[in-house]
Image (tube, rainbow, N blue to C red; front, side):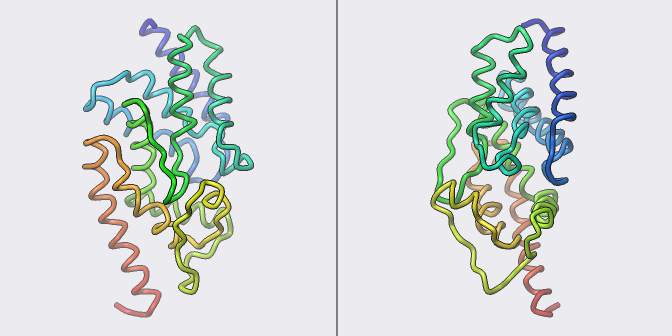
Length: 219
């Protein structure tokens, strides 16, 4: 694919995503913007197909199951329909759609491996945006969007053993740290992603400790 065509596809895809996204402020265009930037940073360090990485990052939440009745494959179908507007090789389109179909965290007990380095990079970038300072903000934004309690010490975390159980969870926001966010550091694929995750993870752990102490009236 020529450089000019690649630039056109990326530009049009940006516009399409901006016009299409729905959800709370943690799953908006700015989430896509951050994931794309992080994915491209990782891609440069790993040396891969940057077009696949950028398009998969742009389209990875085009129809997130959380906002579309739990349909985990809708995003890949929407992305494929969109990409067929352009003269992109079918192998490239299929590669991007495979990444989108398998990117999501699906529960503590559910494995979500990525077969290609491009997929691993986009998955890492998406997970990096779920942890650290921005991850904390996104967790509470989504909890508020779903009218969930911030915290309820009487309700313990659940390590979901299936995607169905994870999708149907209605736990409070602090539980989300134990059920997902604290697990992501050890599920990073790339060496670059693992390095970035370490500091963000540590910040989250400190935050939740402080949150619980303030909840008890300490400090």
